[in-house]
Length: 164
Image (cartoon, rainbow, N blue to C red):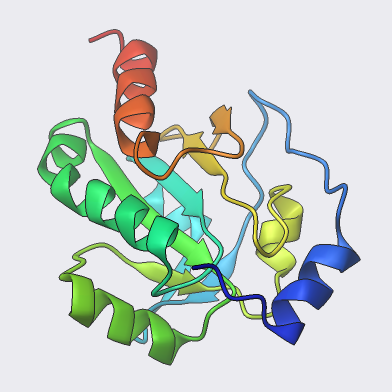
């Protein structure tokens, strides 16, 4: 079950009508810490497709299902020259425990203040996914995604965009 924390409610109320970035434009730049302790920036993924998915919270039902599906499909993403990255308002420590618990081999980024989520139109609690091309341009946006279908929908879109 989804857990509403005071910080999550405040983030959601602070940007309830956040605008989505425009397709074909540069994806909003970010610099966030990950579960591994390394900071990641958008430019770190240049030359690869980036699957950037925002989710409400670690260790919740839908978020766990969504993460497991991305992990299960990770070899398929690698064949498509794509990197999967999850983002939530949880802490680096929470992300590390979640990755350890679920065997996740892709980075989870800690957007504790919700600033990056707001730039992407995904305020705290939103479940949106973005496809960024190897040049850093936003190519697809999936809003209010289904945790069970998100990975397969994203892979299909990625194949279409790549012409495969």
